[in-house]
Length: 176
Ligand code: SF4
Ligand code: SF4
Image 1 (cartoon, rainbow, N blue to C red):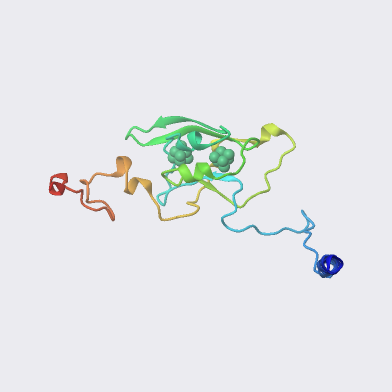
Image 2 (cartoon, rainbow, N blue to C red):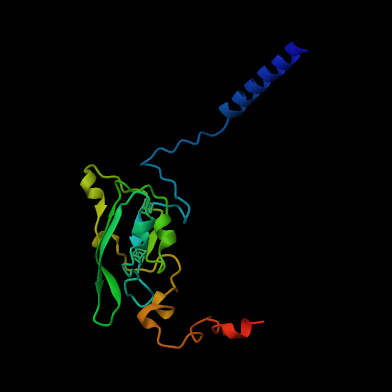
Protein backbone atom coordinates (compact mmCIF):
# COMPACT_ATOMS: atom_id res chain seq x y z
CA UNK A 1 0.00 0.00 0.00
CA UNK A 2 2.91 2.30 0.66
CA UNK A 3 3.98 2.05 -2.95
CA UNK A 4 0.52 3.13 -4.12
CA UNK A 5 0.54 6.23 -1.95
CA UNK A 6 4.06 7.04 -3.19
CA UNK A 7 2.92 6.76 -6.81
CA UNK A 8 -0.12 8.94 -6.05
CA UNK A 9 2.10 11.59 -4.48
CA UNK A 10 4.44 11.46 -7.50
CA UNK A 11 1.58 11.83 -9.96
CA UNK A 12 0.10 14.70 -7.96
CA UNK A 13 3.42 16.53 -8.05
CA UNK A 14 3.79 15.96 -11.80
CA UNK A 15 0.20 17.11 -12.40
CA UNK A 16 0.83 20.36 -10.58
CA UNK A 17 4.05 20.90 -12.54
CA UNK A 18 2.33 20.27 -15.90
CA UNK A 19 -0.57 22.50 -14.93
CA UNK A 20 1.78 25.44 -14.38
CA UNK A 21 3.82 24.80 -17.52
CA UNK A 22 0.85 25.80 -19.68
CA UNK A 23 -0.25 28.83 -17.64
CA UNK A 24 0.34 32.32 -18.97
CA UNK A 25 3.55 33.76 -17.44
CA UNK A 26 2.98 36.41 -14.75
CA UNK A 27 6.33 38.11 -15.26
CA UNK A 28 5.99 41.87 -15.93
CA UNK A 29 8.71 43.37 -18.11
CA UNK A 30 9.20 46.43 -15.91
CA UNK A 31 9.82 49.30 -16.63
CA UNK A 32 8.57 48.92 -20.23
CA UNK A 33 5.43 47.28 -18.88
CA UNK A 34 3.79 48.59 -15.71
CA UNK A 35 1.11 47.23 -13.46
CA UNK A 36 -1.24 49.75 -11.84
CA UNK A 37 -1.29 49.21 -8.07
CA UNK A 38 -4.51 49.23 -6.10
CA UNK A 39 -5.68 52.68 -4.90
CA UNK A 40 -4.83 51.83 -1.28
CA UNK A 41 -1.32 50.63 -2.16
CA UNK A 42 1.13 52.14 0.34
CA UNK A 43 3.95 53.95 -1.44
CA UNK A 44 5.09 57.59 -1.71
CA UNK A 45 3.76 59.78 1.10
CA UNK A 46 2.22 63.19 0.47
CA UNK A 47 0.96 66.06 2.62
CA UNK A 48 -2.51 67.15 1.55
CA UNK A 49 -4.62 70.30 1.80
CA UNK A 50 -8.14 70.75 3.14
CA UNK A 51 -11.06 71.72 0.82
CA UNK A 52 -10.33 75.42 1.48
CA UNK A 53 -6.77 75.02 0.17
CA UNK A 54 -5.11 75.35 3.59
CA UNK A 55 -2.41 72.99 4.78
CA UNK A 56 -3.96 70.18 6.77
CA UNK A 57 -0.86 69.46 8.82
CA UNK A 58 -0.96 71.07 12.27
CA UNK A 59 2.54 69.87 13.19
CA UNK A 60 1.24 67.80 16.10
CA UNK A 61 4.11 65.29 15.69
CA UNK A 62 1.80 62.28 16.05
CA UNK A 63 3.01 60.79 12.76
CA UNK A 64 6.58 61.24 13.89
CA UNK A 65 5.82 59.54 17.21
CA UNK A 66 4.04 56.64 15.48
CA UNK A 67 6.80 56.05 12.93
CA UNK A 68 8.68 52.88 13.93
CA UNK A 69 11.86 53.91 12.10
CA UNK A 70 11.96 57.59 13.11
CA UNK A 71 12.09 58.92 9.58
CA UNK A 72 9.70 61.90 10.03
CA UNK A 73 10.77 65.20 11.52
CA UNK A 74 9.32 68.70 11.49
CA UNK A 75 9.35 72.15 13.08
CA UNK A 76 5.97 73.47 14.32
CA UNK A 77 5.00 77.06 13.60
CA UNK A 78 1.95 79.18 14.44
CA UNK A 79 0.05 81.75 12.39
CA UNK A 80 -1.09 85.04 13.96
CA UNK A 81 -4.60 83.56 14.38
CA UNK A 82 -3.22 80.57 16.29
CA UNK A 83 -3.42 78.09 13.42
CA UNK A 84 -0.50 75.69 13.57
CA UNK A 85 1.52 74.52 10.60
CA UNK A 86 4.82 72.85 9.88
CA UNK A 87 7.62 75.34 9.19
CA UNK A 88 9.53 72.48 7.69
CA UNK A 89 8.58 68.85 7.33
CA UNK A 90 11.00 66.11 6.32
CA UNK A 91 10.63 62.42 5.50
CA UNK A 92 13.62 60.21 4.87
CA UNK A 93 12.33 57.68 2.36
CA UNK A 94 15.60 55.78 2.57
CA UNK A 95 14.43 54.60 5.99
CA UNK A 96 10.67 54.49 5.45
CA UNK A 97 9.21 50.97 5.42
CA UNK A 98 5.83 52.16 4.04
CA UNK A 99 3.93 50.67 6.95
CA UNK A 100 1.27 53.41 6.90
CA UNK A 101 1.31 54.02 10.66
CA UNK A 102 1.92 57.74 10.16
CA UNK A 103 -1.23 58.04 8.03
CA UNK A 104 -3.21 56.07 10.59
CA UNK A 105 -2.05 58.34 13.41
CA UNK A 106 -2.74 61.66 11.66
CA UNK A 107 -5.83 63.39 13.15
CA UNK A 108 -6.20 65.81 10.25
CA UNK A 109 -5.73 63.35 7.33
CA UNK A 110 -2.80 65.51 6.24
CA UNK A 111 -0.32 62.73 5.67
CA UNK A 112 -1.45 60.12 3.18
CA UNK A 113 0.03 57.20 1.29
CA UNK A 114 -0.19 57.10 -2.51
CA UNK A 115 0.32 54.24 -5.00
CA UNK A 116 3.33 56.01 -6.58
CA UNK A 117 6.07 53.43 -5.99
CA UNK A 118 8.63 54.81 -8.45
CA UNK A 119 10.78 56.83 -6.09
CA UNK A 120 14.11 55.02 -6.46
CA UNK A 121 17.15 57.32 -6.65
CA UNK A 122 20.81 56.79 -7.33
CA UNK A 123 21.91 59.16 -4.57
CA UNK A 124 20.48 58.18 -1.19
CA UNK A 125 20.30 61.83 -0.12
CA UNK A 126 17.74 62.42 -2.89
CA UNK A 127 15.38 60.24 -0.86
CA UNK A 128 15.16 62.89 1.84
CA UNK A 129 11.97 64.74 0.92
CA UNK A 130 11.28 68.23 2.24
CA UNK A 131 7.90 69.88 2.72
CA UNK A 132 7.96 71.38 -0.77
CA UNK A 133 8.43 67.87 -2.20
CA UNK A 134 5.64 66.42 -0.06
CA UNK A 135 2.90 69.06 -0.07
CA UNK A 136 0.39 68.63 -2.91
CA UNK A 137 -2.34 71.02 -4.06
CA UNK A 138 -5.19 68.53 -3.64
CA UNK A 139 -7.03 66.87 -0.78
CA UNK A 140 -6.12 63.28 -1.64
CA UNK A 141 -8.43 60.74 0.00
CA UNK A 142 -11.46 62.08 1.93
CA UNK A 143 -11.60 65.32 -0.09
CA UNK A 144 -14.48 66.72 1.98
CA UNK A 145 -12.73 66.47 5.34
CA UNK A 146 -11.69 69.72 7.00
CA UNK A 147 -10.21 69.34 10.48
CA UNK A 148 -10.90 72.97 11.39
CA UNK A 149 -14.64 72.50 10.98
CA UNK A 150 -14.53 69.98 13.82
CA UNK A 151 -11.72 71.07 16.12
CA UNK A 152 -9.00 73.62 16.74
CA UNK A 153 -9.28 77.35 16.16
CA UNK A 154 -12.05 76.92 13.59
CA UNK A 155 -14.54 75.86 16.29
CA UNK A 156 -16.46 78.80 17.71
CA UNK A 157 -19.70 77.10 18.74
CA UNK A 158 -20.52 75.61 22.11
CA UNK A 159 -19.98 71.94 22.83
CA UNK A 160 -22.67 69.84 21.21
CA UNK A 161 -23.44 72.38 18.49
CA UNK A 162 -20.86 71.18 15.95
CA UNK A 163 -21.51 69.17 12.81
CA UNK A 164 -22.92 65.74 13.77
CA UNK A 165 -21.87 66.41 17.37
CA UNK A 166 -24.08 65.11 20.16
CA UNK A 167 -24.97 67.22 23.16
CA UNK A 168 -22.66 66.55 26.12
CA UNK A 169 -24.09 64.25 28.76
CA UNK A 170 -24.97 65.83 32.11
CA UNK A 171 -23.12 63.42 34.38
CA UNK A 172 -25.49 64.24 37.26
CA UNK A 173 -28.28 62.65 35.24
CA UNK A 174 -26.38 59.36 35.45
CA UNK A 175 -26.52 59.28 39.28
CA UNK A 176 -28.70 56.50 40.71
S1 SF4 B 1 5.00 54.71 6.38
FE1 SF4 B 1 5.76 53.90 8.35
S2 SF4 B 1 7.98 54.03 8.20
FE2 SF4 B 1 7.16 55.32 6.57
S3 SF4 B 1 7.08 57.39 7.46
FE3 SF4 B 1 5.07 56.43 7.80
S4 SF4 B 1 5.21 55.50 9.86
FE4 SF4 B 1 7.32 55.92 9.16
S1 SF4 C 1 1.05 65.06 9.24
FE1 SF4 C 1 -0.71 64.75 10.64
S2 SF4 C 1 0.14 63.60 12.39
FE2 SF4 C 1 1.87 64.46 11.25
S3 SF4 C 1 2.29 66.40 12.29
FE3 SF4 C 1 0.94 66.85 10.56
S4 SF4 C 1 -1.13 66.79 11.46
FE4 SF4 C 1 0.22 65.78 12.93
